[in-house]
Amino acid sequence: MIERPDFLKWGDPARLFPIVADSSREQRITSILLAVMTQVPALAAELLGTAGIRIGVRSRVEAFTEVVLIEESEAKNRPDGLVVVTTGKSKWSALIEAKIGKSDLEPEQVQRYIEMARDNGIDAVITISNQFVTRADHSPVQMSKVLLRKVGLYHWSWMSIVTACKILQHQQSIEDTEQAFLLRELLRYLEDPRTGVERFSQMGADWKDLTQRINNGASLKKSDDDVANAIGCWIEEERDLCLQLSRHVGQTVETMMERKYRIDPAARIKASIAALIDCPILKSTYRVPDCAGDIEVAANLQLRTISVSMKVKAPLDKKSTKARTNWLLKMLKQDDPRILVSAHWPGRAAPTQKPLEMLHKDPELIQTDNPTLAPHSFEITLVDSTGKRFGGRRTFIEDVEAIVPAFYDLVGQNLRAWQPAPPRPVKSKLDEALTEVVEQEVEPSTEPPEQTD
Figure 1: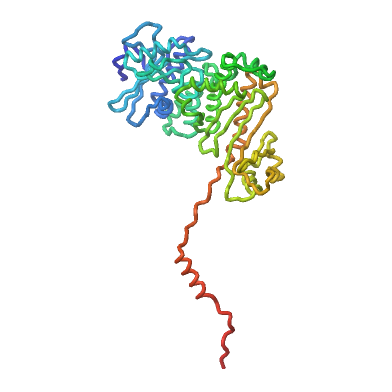
Figure 2: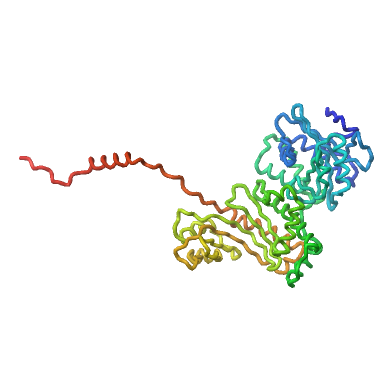
């Protein structure tokens, strides 16, 4: 039997089949998720690992719903759940607050739960909603750093939970048949649209006006609401796309950014706004495990194009431009009129660019003006001009989410990074001299054999 923690006045163990009102979708989905986490250690490890918690063979995961804490018993301060991880003599706990459908997290409510966690000795608060963040330790709501000195704040989107389930399935990480069944049923439940789990599907209401202003040559300001909204939406789409790529390849894909922005999301938003004003391009970078290079996605608001690109080093053991280009072309066998190849050259020579289909006919077309130079690297880019669809809130997202996996299928999965061959053993001068002597001794004589009577 599960014993309630000392700080818990009331809390029902998380049920796989909760008995709640039809309108209580949040209670139902939270209870089901927490119940499966207690029975499937691999899922608990995958999710709680984002909060820095390691689930080992000696760890026990317990969960409660509709919890009432000793220090606060008001109805409005009733979190949706509680997770307790016990490993040996150490314990870690987190309050759970979940939203579903179009409901967003309320900063005041999250703050109350952080204060409750602090007062009751609870280590963290985990929020769950359809809002997307780049990392689990980034929150959709702004909280005072002072408030978070003793309590951690983490966030999971429902789609990140779906992705975690799919990756575990793809990697066949769960051998226990009952646990595999529970995971499969949870995934089936979360993927049903009636549960309220949603992916990011459209830009903000002022997206069309922003793209039109840029198209008309208007100057942007840091104080413009549509600029800030565009950055916020792009970051949400960045995370959703990262999750989609993870499901596409069956492994965890990372969003790449400078370290200072990993620990300070607000600074990243501020820098992104300044970058968009300076150059109207939205950019994101993704790292797929074992891929030849990072994948960069760029949406040019002025040209109304979406581009996806990768860079690879040219094989330095090949001397000519033709040989180095053929090395690349052997990996990119499938033509697509949207794919361009850029060659980067030593010194001050400007990059040259040609369509992939043209290079398949003549690899030397990409040669720069100086025929003695050979490229040191290549950049492969898929560029799609989406026209009017670029200004559509939904159509823009649809195109981004179609172009990126298409690029991976055509280019990303086929590229292999060049590596120099390992060095050959160096023979000593003595070995070389001895070899020379032996070769001379066994060298056949050129004189005719002596005649005998």
